[in-house]
Image 1 (tube, helix red, strand yellow):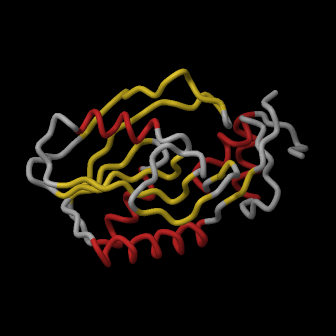
Image 2 (cartoon, helix red, strand yellow; image 1 turned 60 degrees about the vertical axis):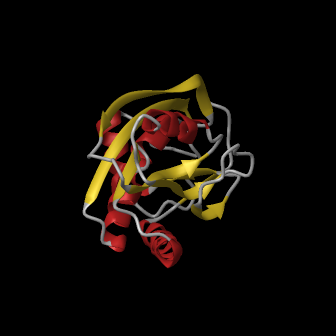
Length: 184
């Protein structure tokens, strides 16, 4: 059983509104050639930002850091990369949330071997204690954020799911993964 952590569920409509606002901030002062998603969490926000910003090129770097809700490994590590040609490109690194800033640092270290023109960081949410503040973000939060693409994962981790408006997905997760009927 994991310790209880204050959580907040972000619905698809809330997510789209935050990403639209983030895209407006970015486009008002920066023109990127490429978006690099930090997988897993940054994949969906990055794909939506590619669409909103009209960027044709996207890549990703998969970084593992969390073991569960609010439980990290000793240090983040890269498991896979799929990167386009980055020489002389202006790039935006996108993640769903920046907690400690250590994942952003690992990604910056990996990309330091490329000759890109400029690099910026963007995230939907940032924790106030992060050692790295992204150039663009939607909101500073101190809760554990539950995104609409991680409902089953959150249930497995015993997250507090009050206010989740996707009962069909909750029912599927219960049936598919054998979760208890009562999820508190």
